[in-house]
Amino acid sequence: MKPQYVPLDKLTPKNKRYKIKVKVKEKSPAKYPENKKAYQKLVFEDDQGNRIRGTLFDDKIENFEGILEHEKEYVIADGPIRNTNPMYRHKEDILGVVIYLEDTRRKKTNNGYEFDVRDVVVVDDSIQKLGDGLVISLCGELATKECAKLTAWCESFIIVSFRHLQPAQHTGFSLASSMSTTIDTNPTGPEVDALKAWIPENEDRISDHMGHQLTLREGGSSNVIMTIKDLNNKKSTTTTAYERHWLQVTIPNAKKEDVNAHIGCNGCGKHCPNVETFKFYCDVCKAQCIAEKRVSVSFTAADDTGSIRLTAYGKQCETLLGLKDTELIQKKITDWPEFEDIASQLKEKPFKLEVGPTGAIKRIGYLKWVVKSVVRE
Image 1 (spheres, helix red, strand yellow):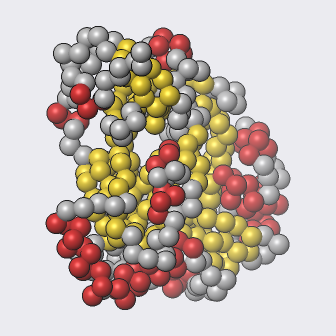
Image 2 (cartoon, rainbow, N blue to C red; image 1 turned 60 degrees about the vertical axis):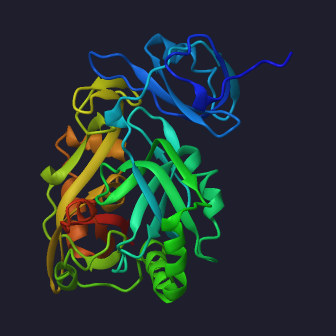
């Protein structure tokens, strides 16, 4: 006799004895908050497309680490069921026309977990200014499998509905996927009908939005050298987050004390034991983090038209100073007499810097420039 599985949309807290057959659709990194239970969240889906969230606590995380795998199917029985707290139910629902789909990229969490991420930009009839499209950051299979349905975005106007989004924490006026986010590429309803009616009368405007996003994100940097005077004259109201500009500069007064090099938390940068990949609980990030090499240098760059204060991080710092991060960390704990030779080269021989706005321009509209790449001959 074929087993009788309960559809997820029929489950309630009253169900004590049941069986469900589901796939693991999302599996978040485990969290280890201080003085609280460790937890890991999952999303399951049945063959009817219904979804349910689950949570593993403490030792269950390790017990199920190699069992509950992404996209694999399982039979689960008699687990306790609770209604979602109403305060966590409200999520943003968005309907719009896709004007940009980013290539998939990889990101890493503070505890070393890697995942796929992808930005989608949408507009509707409320968006007037070019560059003001709503950015939606999608993670996991939403960025890969689900976004595969949107790959024809530049060939036709695709209307898409995103349900259960949440405000992004570090990217200004944007949204990000949650554990419950779904994407519908064939939405229906009065709002969809109104958007469909709006498109034919505004095809040129939508195409302008598309072209603007492509220019910003894929062609935002040119080989034309900008003067520091012109860069300093740029305003936050007319500068986009994806702009890139080249400068040809010297550093008249590089200082050894402006070099920062240490082993620190991969999340917040706090100093920690000199052990690479050492996992520890960071009381700033409130999570399990990994120690990593962190290097940066702040300096005043100058050309014939003016000067600007900038900071180069990581690889850009290494290229600028001509030393690897391990060498820089070692030099910082010695007298480093060779720094005078480095400072002299930076003062006498011009080199190229590519700069772009920091994330503050998206969060609070504040324009500050940071080094994106360094070219020294």
